[in-house]
Length: 104
Image (cartoon, rainbow, N blue to C red; front, side, top):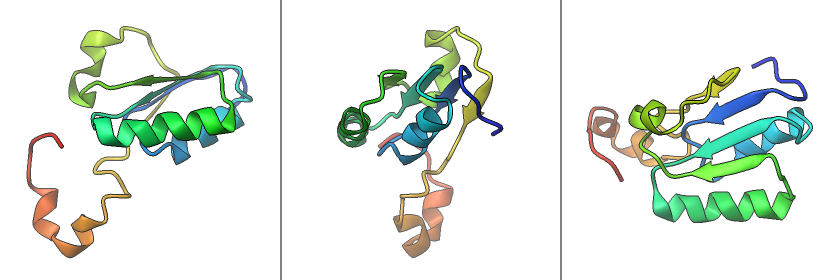
């Protein structure tokens, strides 16, 4: 992602926060990181991890990533999309989940 201090980044499927906090670390907590996730249950872990690490440059949102441009009009220098989320271990067990639609 060629991250450096001062960049603005969007992590569209951020929970539980590993990628978003790593981005914040690489930008030196000096830019802006929007850490977004649709799942309320997963957002709790995301907020907890960001708070635990003490980052002030990370803002958490809960928006359907397919519609995020309707809510956040800011332009980002970097956008990370990890969809389906790599921690969704059930895809390995049930490959049909790759084709299912709908929100969690």
